[in-house]
Structure formats: structure tokens, C-alpha cells
Length: 89
Image (cartoon, rainbow, N blue to C red):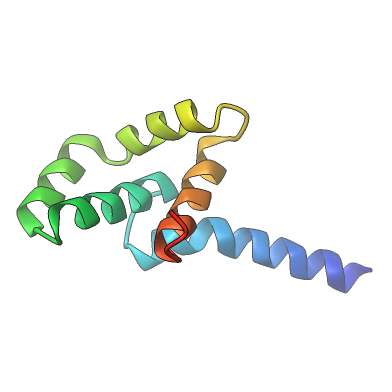
């Protein structure tokens, strides 16, 4: 039973922590925002850096608060990040 709980805890931490590591971001909302902006601007460095300097993940955090009001923004941003990464969105 302990192994199962430990495995689930490790998977939960990886689910939340991996987006910020993969995108070199400060939070999962920042990582989601980076991925979304890169997708929308076609990977343009200027567009990505401009939005990131102005927002730092705040726009994604607000969007997740509106889309998923019952989830903490950290979890909602991670969920949407993985949906976008895996092509489920």
C-alpha cells in the first residue's frame, strides 16, 4: 500500500512540476502561457518574449480560473498544458 501511495505522489508531483521544467518557466501557468503563445505566433521569438515579459503567466492563470473554477490554478494550468502537449486540445 505504501508503494502505491508513493508512486501516486511521485506521479502527481511530476504532473505538476514537469511543465515548468520542460518550458524553463517559473510556474505551470507560465509554461502553459509560453506553449500557447508559441503555438499562436508560430514560434516567433518576438511575440513569445513580449507576452512573457508583460504577463509572466498571469493571463493563463486568470483563464484557468475562469475555465476551471473548482480547481486550483496550478493544477488547472498543468492539466491544460498536458492537453496541449499531447494534442488533446
